[in-house]
Image (cartoon, rainbow, N blue to C red; front, side):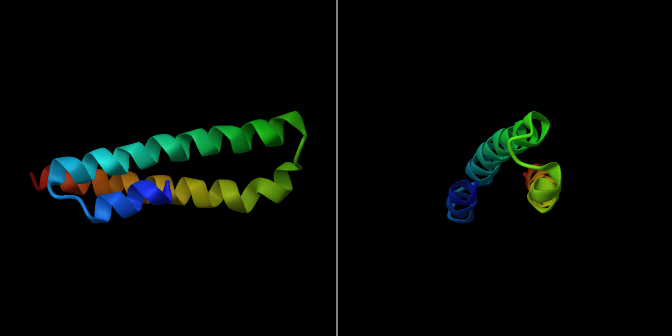
Amino acid sequence: MGAHYREATRARSTAEFVSKIEGGLQELEETTYWLELLAESGIVPASQLHDLRQEANELTAILVSSVKTAKRQR
């Protein structure tokens, strides 16, 4: 996700920015999925994953907001 964000900061157009951020969102969703599986399977106690899952949710909200703002400014 971080690599997508870095690429987005160097985007040459709004469309490219949105594309890179949306790619980061896909990666973030995949990460969230794996964190959920780790917790649900009992491989890692849910309590140990709480902060990571919360951060992933916060990052998702930030990136979604960024995409919405960029699309409005087109």
